[in-house]
Structure formats: structure tokens, C-alpha cells
Image (cartoon, rainbow, N blue to C red; front, side, top):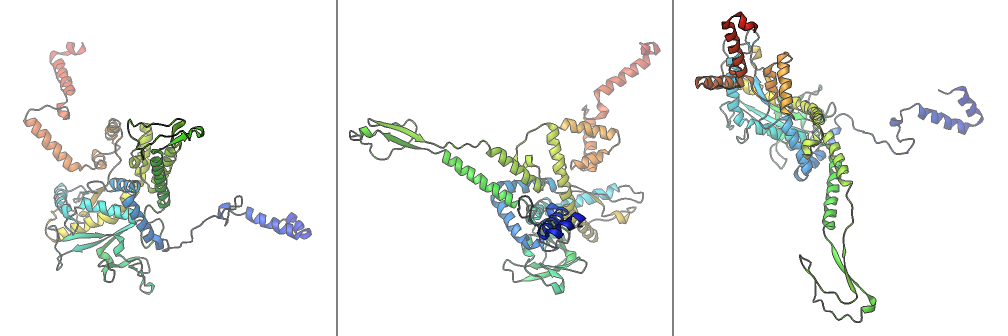
Length: 498
């Protein structure tokens, strides 16, 4: 708002008044919201994308990310590390949790489901070549690299479909290329190969049947899985996790290439012969053609000549710190542990643990997204088909509303110092802060299977008269203490007082 001073200046000097009003207008606005920085005059770039427009470049980003995954070891290491901490080598651990009428886990039915699921997981993929763990690993890698992964579910007995397991249910995962980006029919609600209703709910997917792209089939959304990585609401298709780091990684690749070329040039040298002008006329030495440098070589110089070497004096003292800082930035944007990617570990125990804590906070977000979008719907659907197929029978006393209940456990944060971690777990269980089963699940250990294994092991050792301190019942210190107390008790009060 203009004040009396602005009005007075504008009355006597309109040009100065206009400049003053414009300056006041700029002063009252956010500097970051201006088209350009008022101090440096540098333009402030801004995103012009609206809902569903961010994915127009998703295919280009996907292709760049694939190229880097194929040719850049840093990107390969990032994706491998993400998959190892999101899915793990054995896939997402699924522990069935059916309950009885009293709200407790029905152990017998849970064991039956576990036994069935272990056999089913050997060939979950409809191609019969990949197990559930291998399928989840590749799907997670496709999801993070390309931005999305699709899966078509086959259930029931279908003509021409041979299932790799006894259970008539399998998944056919495929990369986003098979859902066409270029086919959109707004009048039908179809955008980039996906048809949605007015509320944004998926109705059907248009799947490309061959590599030529001329034959398509439309599949209902109930038979499809679409796991996508998004940064904004209302994104129809996913975007690569590496979208903000591609340029930085490309610059790092160019920098590394320049360093390698410089090192190769610096490792080579040339020689020269300096000749004294006064002795040029007296030079009658014949050198016999080319001179080859090697170990122990020598050559003869004419009078007045001197031999020298041309070598590189390039210094690279700052290349390593600069490269490491840029790699940390790229790792941070990708949500991955930089030390694990670069295999460069330094710092104290507290520093390394803090880095693990920070990175696993990001891993857990990706783990939950993968479980809810891929593992859980597949497990529930497969279990339902197994029940309908008669492979599993629900015992009496099981709450039917809890048959599909399960605990899904993804990889957990590794230990840096196992001794310190074990002390923390022991204190946590003694103080009832958490159960031993929960700690076992955090280590990807099945509590029920572990207890039965320990029970069988201790029974076998007891039958063979093997005493081990691993069994608290055979703790030597407690046995000595108990025997001493018994002896004192038998000797009477005087001995006890002594």
C-alpha cells in the first residue's frame, strides 16, 4: 500500500514514484517466487507440469535409467543395494497368523499354511523358471529403475494355461514397455494405456501382446498388479527413482572418463634429444631408425647432444574428495546407503550406525510400498485359490475372518557390532519392551520354526547326555550354585551362617 511519502514523491516526480512503487512491490513478495533473483538476475526455473503431465517424460527417464544400469557401475550398485535391502535374497518373509475364537494364533493351521506356501514359492512365476524370491527381486529392480512394474494374475483352470505348481494360481510380471504410453482415449477414460473411472480407479489395462506393438489385449484391473513409484498425487504412471540423479550421475561418468584418460596420458612419456648447434656439422652418428624404450635400453648420443623426457605434471589432489562428495549426494537422492554402494567404510561405530539408521528409514518406506502393492495381494489371492482347490482345509475353531492374516517381514538393518546389539535385545526382552518373537522377525527368522528347531535340538542333546551352556537348563554356574545351596541346607544352619 502506498503511504503519504510515496504519494508525495509520485506527485512531484512520477518516474521516481513508479520506481519506488515497483521496488516496494518486489519487497513485499517472496524473493524465491520472483521470475529472477533480484541480486544476481539469474532466472529462477520452475516446474510447469500439472497432474498427469509429469509422466510425459517417464519413458525417456526409464530409457536413460536402463542405459545407466547396463553401462554405469555406480547405478548398478545403487539398484543392487536397494533390492538387497527392500526385498532381500530370500524375498519378503511371510508368516501366517490365522487366529482361533479366543484371538490366539492357531498354531496347527499356521504351520499347514507355511508348509504349503514354502512349496508354492518355489515356482510362483508362471514361466516356471523363477521362484518367488527371484521374481520379487527382479520386480523390485524393475520398479525402482523403470518407475513401475506390472503383473498379470492367472487363477483357476484356463484352457492353454499350465501352472508350474499344484495351486492353480501364478503371476506373469512384465516391464512397463508392454503397457503403451502413446495410446490415450480421453473420451473412454483411457490414459497411457490404463483406463480409469471418474474417481481415478483403474478399470482395465491395455497390454501389448508382442514386440511389434500392433496386437493388444484389454485385461480387467482385478487380474492386474500395478506397482508404481510416484513423487506426486494423481500420477497415472510411475517415474524412475533415479529421475533427479540422472544428470548428476552422467556428469560423474564424464568426470571419471576424463580422469581415466588423463591417467593414461600421464602414464606415457616421450623422449627428446637436445642438440648443440655448434656441433651439428660434426655429427656423423647413425642411429639406425626407430628407438624402442624398454627395461635396460641404452643408446648413444653424438657430441653436443643431451637426452630428456617429456612427462605430465598434472596434479589430482582434489579429484577424490570432489568425486566422493558428488557420490554421497547421488546416493542421498536415491535413498541408498553410500558406504554400502561405494564400499568405503570409515568413521566410528556411532557414525556408521547413524548412517544405517538414516538409510533404513528410507528402505522401510520402499519395503512397505512393495509389500502392500505386490507381496500381500499375491499371498492372499494364492491362499484363497489353495483353499478353493482343497489343498488346505480350515480346522474347526479358526476365525474365518483371520485366515488371510499374516506378518510380512522385509530385510532389517544389519548389525555393526553384534555384541552390543545382542545386549540391547537381552535387556529389551527382560524389561518386556518387546517380545523375543518380534526380535526374531526383525532378523528374518520364523519364531515358530525356530522354537521347534531348538526344542528338537535340546531334546536330542539331552538324550545323548550332552551338556551345553547354550541350554539355560544346563548352565554350569547355576548348577554349581544350586548344588552349593543344597549342600549348605543339608549341613544345617551353622554352615549356612558361615
